[in-house]
Length: 316
Ligand SMILES: Cc1cc2nc3c(=O)[nH]c(=O)nc-3n(C[C@H](O)[C@H](O)[C@H](O)COP(=O)(O)OP(=O)(O)OC[C@H]3O[C@@H](n4cnc5c(N)ncnc54)[C@H](O)[C@@H]3O)c2cc1C
Ligand code: SF4
Image 1 (tube, rainbow, N blue to C red):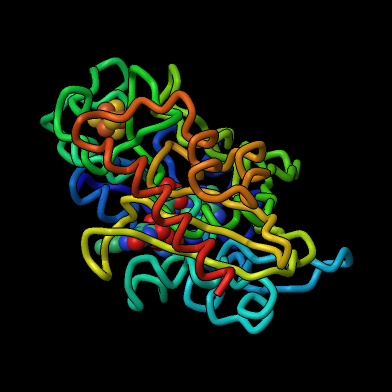
Image 2 (image 1 turned 30 degrees about the horizontal axis):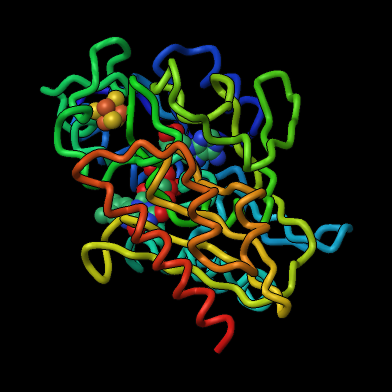
């Protein structure tokens, strides 16, 4: 690990200024992703700004009838919250499908949204990787790509966003709240928060340098039945090959997003309108134009079967 300096921030704007103005500075929250990447020298920050004293640890009702989740609420506390379990069960289930109890005790809402891809070549500093070193190439294209993306990928990067929580947030139409070094706040729809890799795979999200996540806001509850179905190589401690987050209403309509298949949680509203026609109809449209590799073309039928399983449970 490379040497770095460290400070504990006590004010959000000062924290944003510290990161925005200092090249090589990064936030650290639970540290469960960043520290691993630093040990491998995939990430080499020169200065860490620890945000854990900023107090964003509350889950509160909003005047609109939704929920505001502080960026530092741990995954454990969020999944266990009574309101979340009752009104946003898809979120609770998605979080509990991820990582392990110990990791969820440390992992934060903001950090979870910003976890980096699990592409094996991204983690190996001997390999070409446009995301780690822009312009160096992509060892995964033509390499081993079982875990990687099938839709929304580009000729510069075929990695996936690996997280579970964000797939549920996409179904719920969450907003990501931020503050910058000038004290300006903004609310970013989760649909536009993660980027497709396109020409700049090194930029995972639309956040500006130093922009700090302060909270995630949920609209009023959707009702319906909530599901998070995650298919993976091991029963725990494994990232999704394919996951399905869904809210299904009694009349068979609903919302659905897929994880493990694209650079961002993958939701196609026109496709989910076909839910009453069944899983085949939805995935045919949701994955139109998909470009799987020979290693991961199994993900397309797997997504259909996972969704069919969810629909069958909703009818049971
Ligand atoms: C063995 C293992 C298995 C895992 N399995 C899963 C899994 O199955 N599913 C899953 O979804 N996840 C899984 N994870 C990932 C885990 O969920 C993430 O590591 C965790 O959520 C990151 O949160 P953190 O607070 O520790 O982030 P950190 O590691 O502290 O930070 C991550 C990134 O977010 C930035 N950041 C943190 N907070 C803020 C903020 N408020 N504003 C702006 N930037 C910020 C940091 O600069 C850093 O770039 C696994 C991790 C491990 C180590
Ligand atoms: S798929 Fe993306 S993360 Fe993986 S090696 Fe290629 S550029 Fe890097």
